[in-house]
Length: 295
Length: 117
Image 1: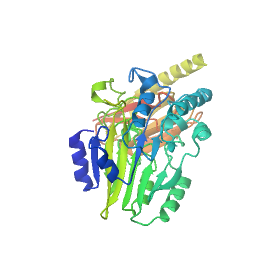
Image 2 (image 1 turned 90 degrees about the horizontal axis):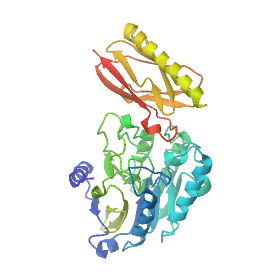
Image 3 (image 1 turned 120 degrees about the horizontal axis):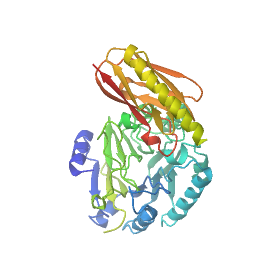
Image 4 (image 1 turned 30 degrees about the vertical axis):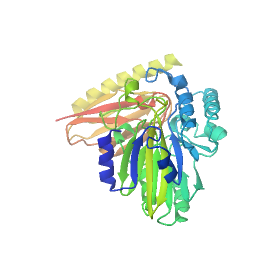
């Protein structure tokens, strides 16, 4: 995302609580120490994909693991927001890809690693293989005063959360106070980013309605293979870069174009560090985009 | 299997051609066949103000048919005929696509409705 786009987002957001940086903690450990904690978001690794959109597809994930392991401040946990593997109709190959993916990310020196499915992992078998390797497709946990919720909008091939999961989501949030700090993870955008490209969740509007009463709730997702920031009311939605290939900017064409030619100089791939802070009565999030390899 | 699919596509293509002619003459119906990972035909013409019914079939598995510009979507179930009627009012080009993930190539499964004045 260009700097001007970020400024536009901040203007729309009306928030002083979100800042963007780039690089590997360029301001040094002082910033890191100010945070309550950090986590790293990795997304859309599509293990098993081969093709011109990424001439280095077999090594990109391994390089990103090395980079994350070298961060100056170790994250408390790492979350993968879906499309861990590239789709295949062969269930045996799907499991082989998941097995190899899991082997590679086992090299991360953070042992609290959490996984969401993407449609490439879960839509052809309703999440069966994913569950065998990574557990439930939707879950919650609490960490240092923040409540985290993962929503599954891909195991239904029609990109629905479904009434059952929405009821579970609503019941979970009812246990929170309106000013609790809440982070939602999901794969596809919950809002209608580009309906003509199917960059949406069929019943995502219901999830957003459920979130509306909560003042400190934020969404991190993947799927669109690029940094992107959007507001639905007071709720910010932050999309992450991919670790396999970039996609066209939202709405660039009536139909979704194929991935653009790979241009390493644009640094189209990467991960991100998210720092959560609460001090002086305020709450803030700092998002730092990280390259695949340390310069 | 491939031969069967190829034959089916040929039939679908021929049916689509006939349906396009019918649509051009009466504005009534157009047959569109869905299969991994394409619609046949993938370009459909219509006239503004004239109701158009898509007659949707699938050869292989469940696909979706979604046109956000018209607020419609439906599943296309194999061995069933699914009918969706719209009345386009403005000339232009409108996208339809599969919104039921159907495999590697799903993202490319789309078509265009061309509405003429």
